[in-house]
Image 1 (spheres, rainbow, N blue to C red):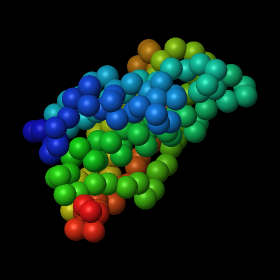
Image 2 (image 1 turned 180 degrees about the horizontal axis):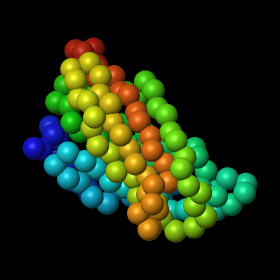
Image 3 (image 1 turned 90 degrees about the horizontal axis):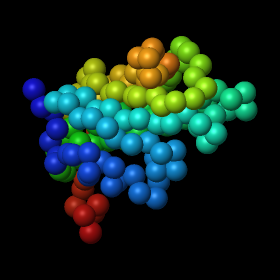
Image 4 (image 1 turned 30 degrees about the vertical axis):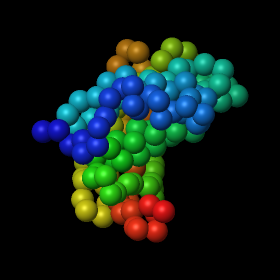
Length: 145
């Protein structure tokens, strides 16, 4: 069952990345399912930590990007989501290539959402498991002026 309540496409998603950290890290939305969203991120100099491994913070940026954007597109036009908590467990180091994150909703309530984001390497091995909690907010008349 499709969960998207706003128009969504790879073109729309990738256009929203212009002039953001997402663009700077070269995160690219690659696939949309009925109830999930995926994006890739390169593992290279600008996503490395000093030891030459994928920086955990870069993984968290990918996870938060996927969870927050998926949450936003899964609520109606008068609503939006903001992150209130995120955690990440780093399972495996990666030195090069590309990682792919996939966000799947665990809970989509009227006030909160919880998304699971798994990040995998090119061999489909789990690199990072992250969970984000989002608050669902509603636009007010003041917001629209």
